[in-house]
Length: 166
Image (cartoon, rainbow, N blue to C red; front, side, top):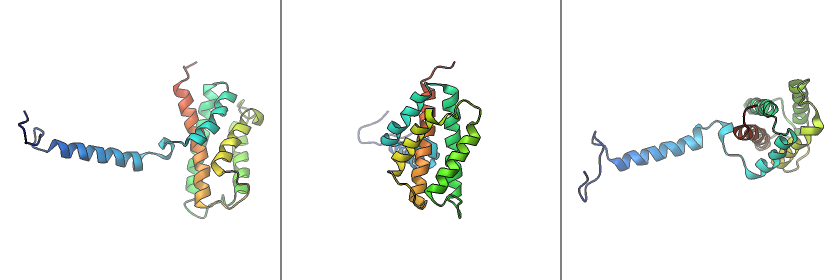
């Protein structure tokens, strides 16, 4: 029982206010530093740019999952490529690698039809890169490419949450 003017303590004698403050700091540190990149919030602009992908796939959960998994992995590859003298040095190189990776990953899966989904995927990258065409892939540009990939992965996870299993 708390008597007026006394600080409330736990059964072990620790000040309750101190415990609350430590828990809040731990939570904020987790939110800022411990989240994996794909758990970080996706910008509203990229969310809006990504939604047409799900519409083009007409809610096909298997295709959404495959595309989300692809971009989760590709974002990781881009991140690791930037840790040393990376292979992806210009947007032109990125576009070529992206195109070839998509063809290889989705050949004979029913997702390879570029018209259905490709223009919407391109729109996400266009939004993230602000219309840049061919430029060096600086750390800032790489971060924007990864943001676009994470937005597509985010879309997949978000849509799958609201899609009933078939």
